[in-house]
Amino acid sequence: MNKDEFQGGARYVGGKVEKAIGDTVNSRDWQVDGVVDQVAGGAQNLYGRAKSAINDAVDGAPELAEKIGSEARDAGERAAEVARRGAASAQASAQEAPVLWALGAAAVGYGIAWLVHGRRD
Image (cartoon, rainbow, N blue to C red; front, side, top):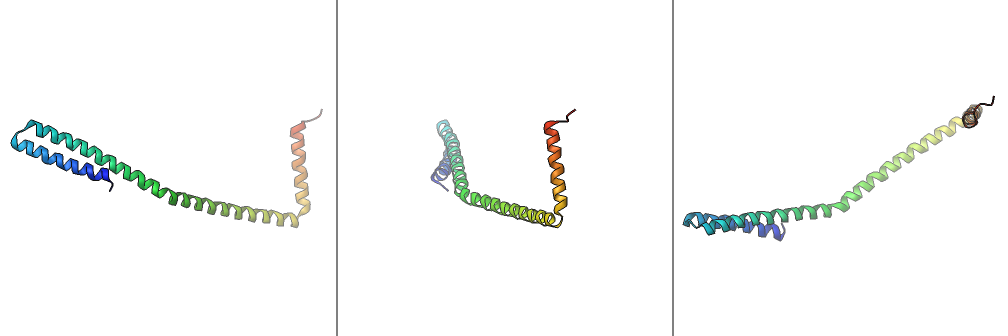
């Protein structure tokens, strides 16, 4: 609780008391002053609560940033591991059947050349 929350709450309660006294003694001035203090106290209390909420969010930001960074690092490590396994698998299959890989590379190269240069009539 910060000082605005406390002061606003106190002013609100004081305004309620002031209005109750005004109602008891039938004083319009006390009634109006009590309502004004209630509204002003409520507004100050609300401002203090908002300020506290913002401070709590700012205080929690480093932990949130660390958590996001940690999760991003974990995801990056998992992606790197998947890429390593895929590369190892491709390398193993290329070692097992180098002729097929050479034919496949030649076919892809021919296809790219045909797309780039078009058919010669």
